[in-house]
Image (cartoon, rainbow, N blue to C red; front, side):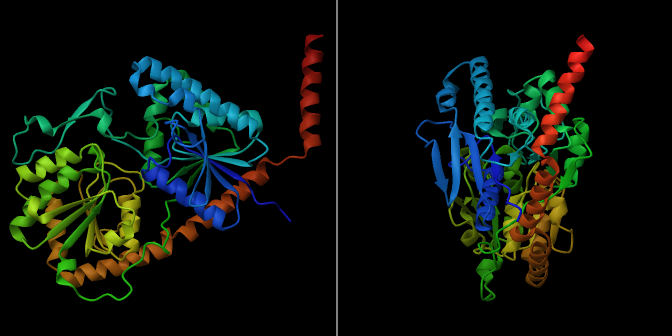
Length: 447
């Protein structure tokens, strides 16, 4: 009987820092362990107060390089980069030392973390899977200190609190790799061409992203995110409720790329036509105070609840009749998958992932990025038509059941893990014979 592959899931940040990639890494680790597979999260110890060894809902977590990374933000940028480079060397060493404890490395994000992991795979002969998580802004920004502006609408664009800097948004996966320099990019590209590696994309638009970075290889697979339907499901007994039908839910980090400022501008227009409508924004982030200031400036505060970070996201979703995600860019948004699994129709922007999940006019509505007038019209179309909202909601749930359930996605990964490990397995004698043969040829050529 073939032994089940043991998986190390490598990710730069993890619990208690939680975002989309971290959530999916945790979900996958938990799902694998429930199926009887050994799955371990390997991540950096960004703060020494975080334990080096931990368990998060049954998933073992190993944190490394705390001595190098703890408190590095207080140093100049160049020192921070040097410390991070040393941390990556520690990662290579750790993966080498643990080589008998895993059969496959699964890296979350095609980022600077991919390089040390790929080097470890080359040294150990283990197969590697890399999941691309985000495409980022489609037009390049001018360096890490770039600035942007929240959407002003009727407000004065020169208002100081409308300005945001580059630290308040997260770029596409590859930006951190690109910042390491051309040699690092070239080496990573060469290593990923290895037949024992696979790149996972979550959306159709990610192919374009990889192509634009010259990383479009034959070893690319499409596997989207999955949602745990034991947690996210519609209310057991749906009763028509006017307050619920007029409540819109937005689950999102309060960051620039999520477009909450666009939603607030749209909500001002919604309120003008539907004063009974209510908006609940679930999540926290660095722009929370600026979004509160915008709410006050637009005089829409009475109709909006900033619920903050919530543990029971599914419970929050069941408070509303529809959901919205106004992102400027995405990878494959968990927020949409979770809302649709709860039977909510969604209004979202035409970005990576969202345009794959939502079929416009069938299970939700799509609008262009930053078009807050179109966003307001789409929200009003559903708020004013409960029958259509329910129709889209049923179709949304069916979409998740057929294509995005966690069990379904986990099956895809298990098949891939098994095939990759099988492909890399070679009789030890054959490997040794090959090595001795190479040495003999080298010795003969030098004679």
